[in-house]
Length: 164
Image 1 (cartoon, rainbow, N blue to C red):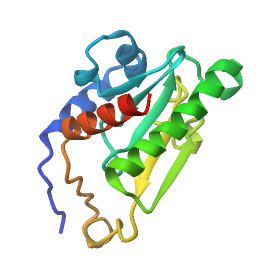
Image 2 (cartoon, helix red, strand yellow):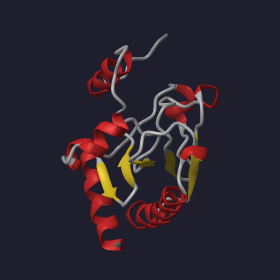
Image 3 (cartoon, helix red, strand yellow):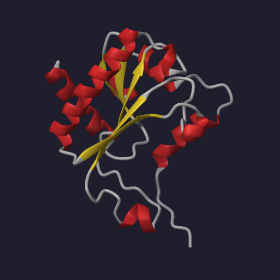
Image 4 (tube, rainbow, N blue to C red):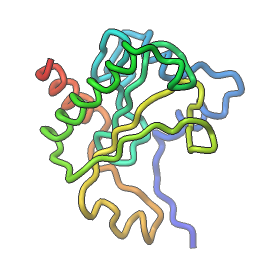
């Protein structure tokens, strides 16, 4: 029997993803100055840190260059270096705020690798806890995210500001 989890906030993503000619959400977020609405937690010189609007776990961050590039080989050394520096600071902020037991960090390059947005390279940082795969995702195929994105944004923005 199919179980239904009411998640009305996902309709925005569904509508955005189904548009034939949509603009890159990372480019939109990088240009718009409303960081709270776009969930941008930190802006660097050539890259920025943004909360994943559809997270695997609380605190799921992405680091992306401002430039709209598809491949990691298209990034300049300054962009690559800043991505790694922001990775280091993001992990420090997540450790301080969420106390995870570990992290998944990675790039999905190309559709075959699972990239939902192939056109704009971005690095995922997913905090993990021992036991975070409990009965809900295993038996009910449902993931529970207990903290609002707005609260996660506030906590991580404040922590990253403190680290700079």
